[in-house]
Length: 171
Image (cartoon, rainbow, N blue to C red; front, side):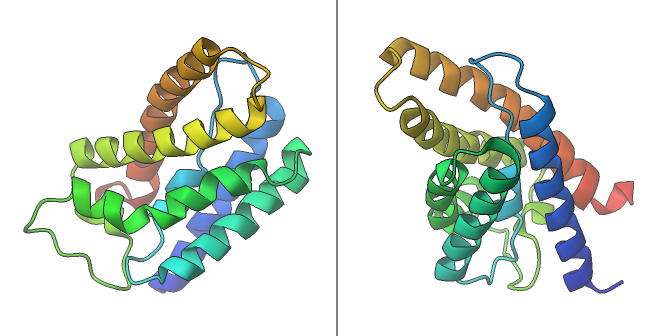
């Protein structure tokens, strides 16, 4: 199987898992489970930033349309993650790590660096998501607690799914 088809299948699986999480896993208002930052950060490193932002918008809109019904919420939260994708990867990677242009950059990082990348991207996603979703109707403390709690849980989920799907040792 070619790397492109493997990536496309992985991307579709992550988006389908996100739809299922949205539909079936709404446990508490303090927890938002989200895998969409993983889908964007696992784009090949050579992917143009403009293309990744457009893809983030379309994927977020599709997830919103299929599962939540609030059109644009995941899109607006995922677009800053796509915009900050390369800076986040550059910040968390060591100087000696080089990212091939056609490869998923997360496969070159160890688990601790993937966790840091996940924490940064999930916090960015959830900060925008929570502020836009609450639209000033919830107290600031609620939004902060929601972002912190959800970021920790989402980062752990991000690392587990990434290591399961993209680590060569497990295939």
